[in-house]
Image (cartoon, one colour):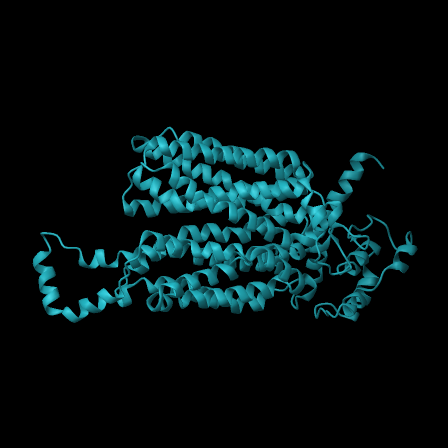
Length: 551
């Protein structure tokens, strides 16, 4: 067989399997993608809402009782006529020191750091569905109860925020655990970027919606920020339980064609093992390439979330109203770039233009270098060139999101069996490092001058370059030896071989219904009658796929 024919046959087979799985964007795997997007939105919204809520809580008195020469008479009249009401509002206001306010803002992140590794382990044992269900319930209740806690005791407020962070920190590794079972070989990028787009959507909407909720007259407005986003997370539990399952074989409404498509070409193990070989992992350069890339990404993201509004207001001289709108625009670019890069990444692999590892390195390099170039450009601009500065800022953060189809997915490439717990490890390390971003930035911008901000932008650019170089040198796109066991079988069926030419293969293969019965999982969508029909209608390669989905 010539090399050309050797390449064309797998491409033809991939196309036929994909075509047999109709209704791509309404399939079970894409429904799970949309639900993961919603879960990621809830996680990010609950994390981000405290910023605007704190402003509304601490500035309530200044807004309601600000006295100027123009409103002096009106203020005196209101105090005379509504003295009791004013006293009541005074009691509901919050006067915090800057240190305590910083503690409130950081409480979520400190709780968040403690849970990703544990969440990855639990998701490996019990499945990502249960972990995220628990996270949504507890996180939403902690958020809804935050206004009560804030009015009862300051320590209780910090505790509620820490609890929300603790449970929401398990969401990312649990999602990664789901995709290790659900993502087909040529849709990993699209599905994972679909789920991570929840972060961008939250960035677009949280500040705008929270600003509007603050204006509600009832109960001073700010508690509704917690009620709305906490309530959304709680309501999300019901469709989550109905639509999401830990593996294709457990889904009661999935079609056999989709199970075949999801499992085609994937490697999986007979044993359910979640004991990672840590000595080998910690000496694996591809794993450390992901760690470095994740750290640099998170540091930059933490800096953006904490200091972007301040830069826009103090250096580029945008008003408060303009600040909120401009701060949300970069997240629109991130949302679009995630969807486009997800499709391009899978397309390049499906067409076999590049290997998986090469595709990951291409997008990581473009994203980091592009972001670094934009940051350097911004460092030379001030309020006299604020429109070009904003354009470069949007482009830089859009470029940065190219890496969402690189290091963020690479766990599934090098160790699909341990993807959840490895995501937990890299997230914990990255979040820990990201906590330094506000402190370093604060130390550099003591006078809040353009020259000081230039140093910050150059640090951001340098971190992006480091992330690109380390990942390009050491990252891999194939399953590493430490992630493979002797019991692993590759679901890669023979091509154009019938049962008559390979009777030895057919005799060694277990029946699909026998395999899933042994594991205690029965798929209502596939019966013994279906198996008999398939054995008569399909060739050996298709039977092998069907019987191997649980191997």
